[in-house]
Length: 418
Figure 1 (spheres, rainbow, N blue to C red):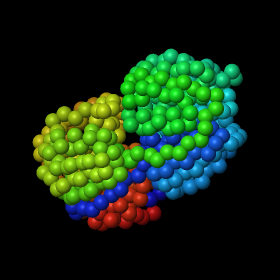
Figure 2: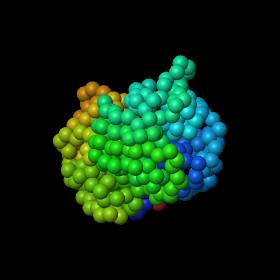
Figure 3: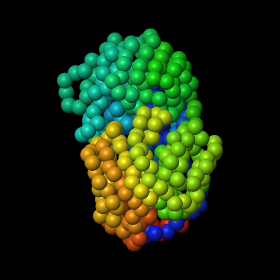
């Protein structure tokens, strides 16, 4: 494991180009398992979560070229196993997306409990329910064991929660199921829309993406396809917050304006000077103000993946901000470490935190307990006076490629240490 040594208190400036959307990359890689023809994915983010997903496919028998680069060539001519490697599954929440394709190709799937952030608090009950609706049967055994001896069949289903990965699991299975599947209360996030577009390229009939009702007409044989991923708006928002909390000016390129708008809206509410178009988000040195009340929401609401970073921004904003993340009760707990840096925090309950600023932060040793709060603590350390040690750095690198190099290019005094 590595740590990032950060000497804070320096305004950062320069330009960052974000990679492809991490949350789109994982379901698209899983979709490649649905066909025996080659699929080519470009603008793939070079992050460890993507590498784990690609290696899971390779372990199942797929030919995978380009791991560690921005282009993946995947051909699943043969699927030799129906049980993904448990060690890799334990590192990645997105491994649940393999269930539908494995049932389609093998008629059986066995999955160890998926890992990732907050594994004990995030069940896959909704995913299993969607697969049961399409004919899968759950069997006794360790982990999750499913069979579909007669294949998958189209179904009408209502998701109790507009879960992103739950919707994606249903979509992946429906694309290879016989008949029509209607998914109501579906998630509308850009990465769900992107998966729908890729499945359409593969030959499935998909309509309604971007709304809460998606219809899929599966086909007997899906074909190979090529796709270039859209830029990661969460990564873009992360760099925008880094600029704002350090008093710097950063150009962030690579994300679409329609995805960035929700990020820019929160920044502008907190009086961060920013502008954006279809190729760039520009953040100027600003004097942030408290955002009153900021609540995460389903798309196009404030993304939960950004709430940790916005909390750090609130420590540097004049006034009081109430931040409410109703989705994940453990995410805000990791930010209690900010109190030891001098932040004025009041944790109301597992979902709500009140921040009063601005407060001068002091460097300290920081623990990256999950991906997004890890990046938020990195931003706090960059704004703080003195030295901080952030680790394990690998937690943050699950979603942010070349983090150390990007920071150094922006003028940060950072170094990676074993």
